[in-house]
Length: 185
Ligand SMILES: C[S@@+](CC[C@H](N)C(=O)[O-])C[C@H]1O[C@@H](n2cnc3c(N)ncnc32)[C@H](O)[C@@H]1O
Image (cartoon, rainbow, N blue to C red):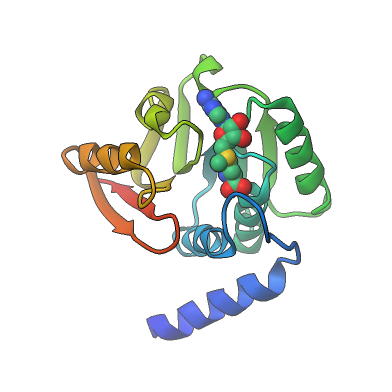
């Protein structure tokens, strides 16, 4: 298949499929579109989001899983009012989705079990805590770790450099706030 055709299809799908206006939110529309496209291409089954805020990024990822036909998002958010808003936003997407979701109203460090995932979106504050946040998370082989704010936050650049020295293939995108995309070898 011609990659340009695939890209055009994904772009039109995500522009048409998702109705919520993301203007003024912490992340921008192109960050959301990138997450959507990565999930459509890579077809993960177990998505974990660390720092879902009011649920905008979560909603875009959920929409992508829905379009894939299956999948689950486990999203961590310790701030009660943000978590409440996230629950409201995801609930507004309806009960007939092909994918499932769960908002965990705790900080990732409070999770005592080991979490298995094949796609993780890391977007908590402060950015210094990215390494600590990943302590209990195991990403399957070929799974993706996507980390926000590579361009604007030096701790995220250090985090990406650390990954590159280990069992990860790492690439970075300099657009907008910057993104790290790492694939587990
Ligand atoms: C930048 S906002 C998330 C924005 C959201 N991902 C989006 O794109 O719409 C960062 C969030 O991380 C949450 N947070 C902070 N520490 C956390 C932790 N230890 N575990 C999980 N979430 C955390 C904050 O409460 C805040 O809502």
